[in-house]
Image (cartoon, rainbow, N blue to C red; front, side, top):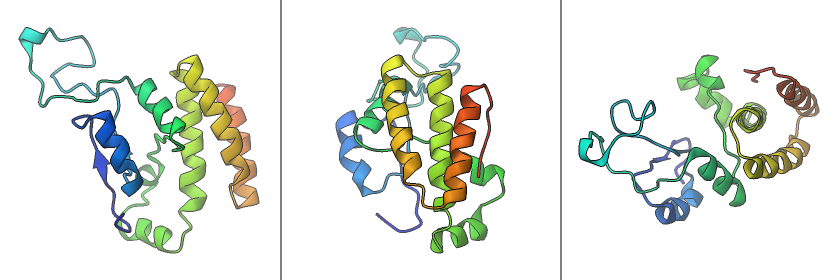
Length: 164
């Protein structure tokens, strides 16, 4: 992987190709993509094809999330840095001194928990809950670990949008 560089792989690529390149440091992966105008609102008939490009990996988001967890990756829906203004030089400084670990890992767990509570199938939820339970234990900063556990409980009670 290239340090401090985000790499994205889209649904244009097959599941096989996507799995092959994940270990290279892919930082963003799409799932359940629709590429035609209004594609998320309604199914498009093949004869009305307005797709911007062909999708090779046609799995649902739930299937992609479960697959990533089965491979040992933590799916994250986090946008906290962008929303908190941690961009550019500010973001790079956090990365270089490794303080971003106190943000990214817990935020990934929190956003995964929200997804599991709101959208996941039972199998994906079961797998995700197991992953979260294990991952909370390895958060190095005790205060962050405790706050993460508190936020995870709050999510079960309906709370949303917690972040570090």
